[in-house]
Structure formats: structure tokens, C-alpha cells
Image (cartoon, rainbow, N blue to C red; front, side):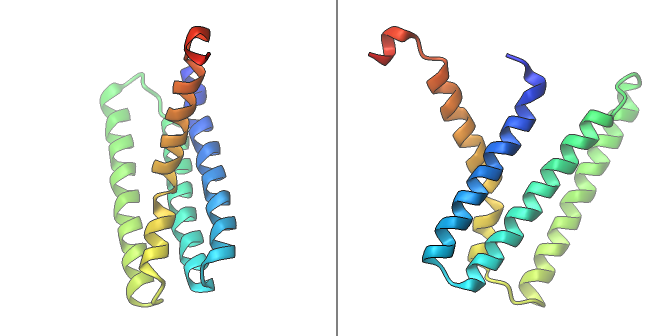
Length: 128
């Protein structure tokens, strides 16, 4: 297995989970929930995309500076997302349940990926 493809596969599956959740919430939920779900999912998807880009651009020739750069970027994005979430809940009065549901798109994508890996690694005798 090419381990360089895992982040792209995880991002694609998470995007699929987001779209499936958007479809389900557009049928079952209120417009306020749909907006909050979309904002939360976009926040976490953009954060993971920026993280993957930062790791791909890192030069690991000097390990200490690469680790400082990656960790600094991680903590900067973590603080930025915290401030954005606080601002959205406090000042915009966005639905917090929809926001949390949207933020869970990446872990849900990870679970889908793990299930698919488990299914694809089964031996033919186990399938019957």
C-alpha cells in the first residue's frame, strides 16, 4: 500500500461523509442546522487540507526546524479554529449542535476508511 495516498483517501472519504450528511440534513433538519453543519465541516476540512499541505512542503533535512514549523502551524491553526468557533457561537448565534456535527466529519471519514481497509484486507475464505 502506498502510504502517501492515505491522506488524500481520508480527505476524499471525509468529503463524501460531508456530502452524505448535507443531503440527509437538507431533508431532515432546519436551515439553521444545515448552515452550522456546513460551516463546521468546512472548517475541519480546510484545516486538514492545510495540515497535509504543510507536511508535504516540509523539508525534513533539518529535523528540529521541520518539527518546530509543523508543531507551530498545528498550534496556530488550533487557536484560530478555537477563536472562530467561539465567535460563531457567541456573536453569530450559529446552532452549536450542527457545528459539532459538522466538526465530526473528519473522524467519521476515518471510521469509514478503517472499515473499508478491514473489508478489503479479508481473505477469500473469510468472505464466504
